[in-house]
Length: 122
Image (tube, rainbow, N blue to C red):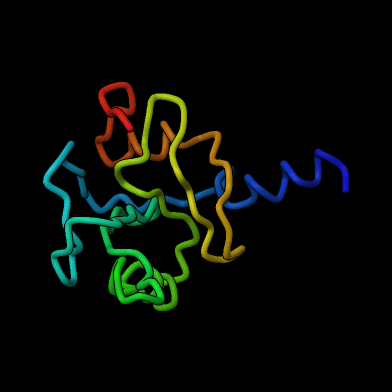
């Protein structure tokens, strides 16, 4: 597989991501799941700014699957794990591809929701 094909796949949804102009601004701290109020394993949907908990692990720890359920309802493809964002990167997950991906536009996508990546630390 050529490197270009791998790169194209990893940025497929990031390059043309549609972000809703819903007025949502994300505070720099104090995050919690919008459905169950968990404060760990949180994912920010990069289309609508929803903050939801991640998947439940086999041992029952983790989240309550609210981010996955949100994707199943609305089909917004990308989310970034809160707490992993730095000035140069973050853990971005593509629900469509069911895999971690690169988002070279992450700073721009986060700025849409009022997040200044330079002010965040992993």
